Length: 197
Image 1 (cartoon, rainbow, N blue to C red):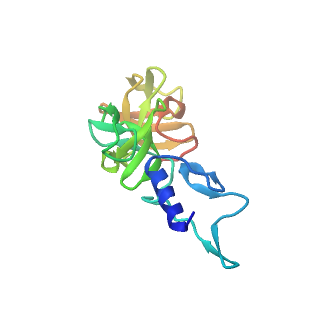
Image 2 (spheres, helix red, strand yellow):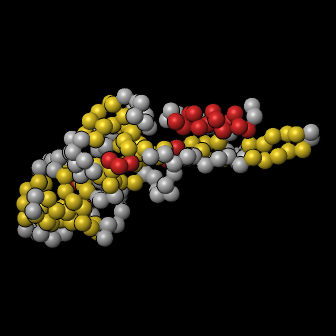
């Protein structure tokens, strides 16, 4: 197969959200990492070898993958693929809900929600402002980052709160006009050990 044909096939598979492992291993974020045999494709022309570097995946922003963001609007269509021609699988109706971007293609972002559902949304439907979702059960928002601290408010599971900071096992959040601290493990929307300032 010629080099342009390989590039076209790779671009078509990426557009369909497929996975291709040509002599490589799948790396985090869906990137192809070079396998042990070769990091580049080669073509042979009259006895000589010409190395052709693999093209980078299109639409990469350079931001880390995965990463948490939040939904920007009260109505966000989750599609089965990166484009308006793909069917809508789900409609989110909660502005500010934290989601995880796990892949990028052009102006589209593949997201994962707190239940593990994945699909594609347009980049204009997500924002970098961090939020968290209270999970498990009703939680007591604490005045200080200590288990014995006085309570400020009760937050039910499913409440979305703005994420202000995190240190050690506690995160400072605000919701419904109240601000206080919750244990990190009671929240969806941040990574273990991640520091927020």
